[in-house]
Image (tube, rainbow, N blue to C red; front, top):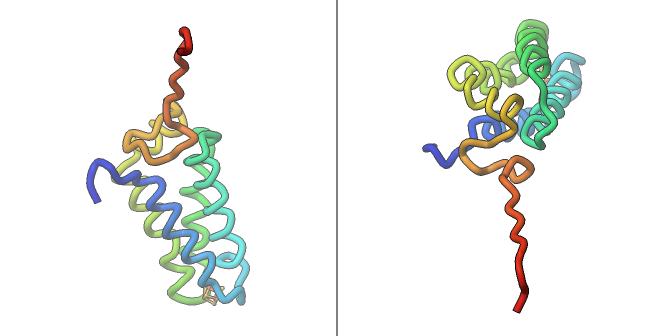
Length: 118
Ligand code: SF4
């Protein structure tokens, strides 16, 4: 990973994997991973808010503390650690509506050229 990697998109990728792998036995993992994925989809889709960052943290903690096995207990780790260490990238997505790595297509600048066509 380098500066062309979007850390929010990476977190979304890992939580999507865990949501797919959840066996569904317990609700915190079955529902919580899907909700975390939905929030991250909203953020990478340009519709995230500051409130979503708080929801990621509080929901992530609930999933970690109440899931029955290691999958659910560790599933939120990429979300929680990227929020802790790369919060500025999350803020760029939800406040500035930009993706610093240029990965999230919904947040890429749109250039309109007005002029004569040949
Ligand atoms: S935490 Fe474990 S037991 Fe619970 S739904 Fe996830 S994979 Fe299944």
